[in-house]
Image (cartoon, rainbow, N blue to C red):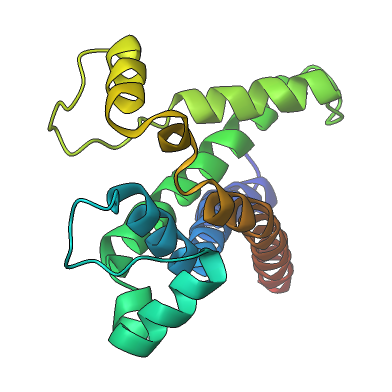
Length: 194
């Protein structure tokens, strides 16, 4: 192996984590920007009117303003640390595995992947991510969830927190991929300067 090949290989190994770094930055930015909507969604889901110490909220905007007024930023960012750690690690690993899958698929395709192979790479990366669990079994199975929700909360129980969740998901995906692409671009520019 020539000296230039050896240097090239060590540089690529040095930068093998750039997708993970960009993904981690994207996960952090997304949670930092969108966490108040997670707090609101959670409050809607747990406030079923039976707990009198929780204020009632008319809608998402009212919930955000009420939490901000009564609890300040601390209330809007309750639970931020575990959420940001989980998202940073999860997105970092996701993009690391996604890039590795794309590299594996592109070896025989001259670097160009079809939409199907991009989808397969994304699915592989997603399959390697395990859903988090607090280890507390609340329901026996999906059917039990449906029966208990219908029994105690009616049809509206199936839609608790849907508005803040929808308001969060579209911008969250946009933030994640915009930050990912821009951080990745900066890391690649830094690699070229080495």
